Length: 334
Image (cartoon, rainbow, N blue to C red; front, side, top):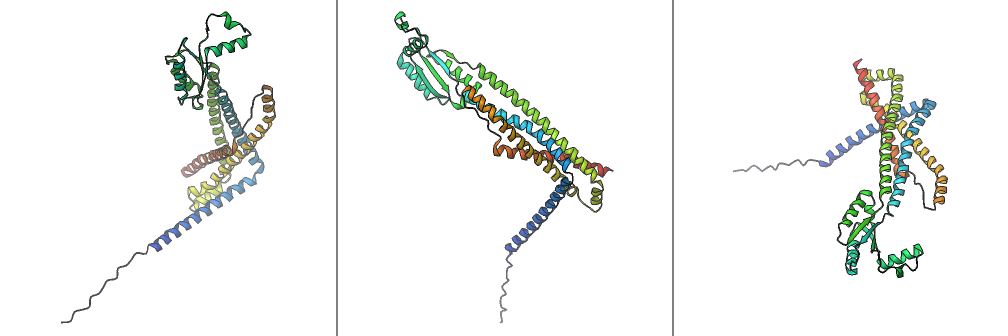
């Protein structure tokens, strides 16, 4: 009996490499088309801006001045906060020890406070040292012989840690020191620091409100400019819509126009800010010399400048998006 030979079926192994190549090719083609469309839209918007140089310069100048004012105020506020933090670092709390407190108990208290992370330094002035300082400052050299006993208590000069250099944290530390059994009186003059921080907080809120208003103004300026551009390109837009252009295709050049206006305005604003700070260097140096204190202004820096440019470009994009979107919706209804 003849047996037929067994046939082995060849299993087909899927070719994963070809699928990966196809997906990579699709992505490359999509990216090339996307880049080409955006480059064409950028060239169209840039060429339209070049056709009206005088109007473009006026628009960019208005945007730049509108952005320069809050930028200048924000940088000045940052410098004021830096200077005030240096003043606040000189805050010192005077802790008066109870009379006739044993020296070993006082030393334990000093060690306890020095180990506190909220305290940077503790300086102890003993009653005898305090009396000698008072004699030297007042001119009464025989005061110690005239008094039967030393009436001065020991004093701890407590300097808060850098993390505690704000009115709320210092006030909390003062309350903690008052609860210590060895302390009699805790003295701190924080009224001027509280007033300074209150003024800086008010100025910060005012600058924020001004920045919001001027930002809305920039959106309106760019939006009005884009609105005029859409009106001038009405026929061109209608023709593109007739041949099947999408709203994204029509909108793209105007969005780039808004971004370019915003970016140019941001560059002008940064130049104005740097010029103003350069002009303030000489008066600041004279003021620092008159008061014999180190005082200097720091500009926005690279990071601040980049943030300003991005913010200005975003305002331009937003203004153009709102205006062109509304225009396309109105044309659709018509």
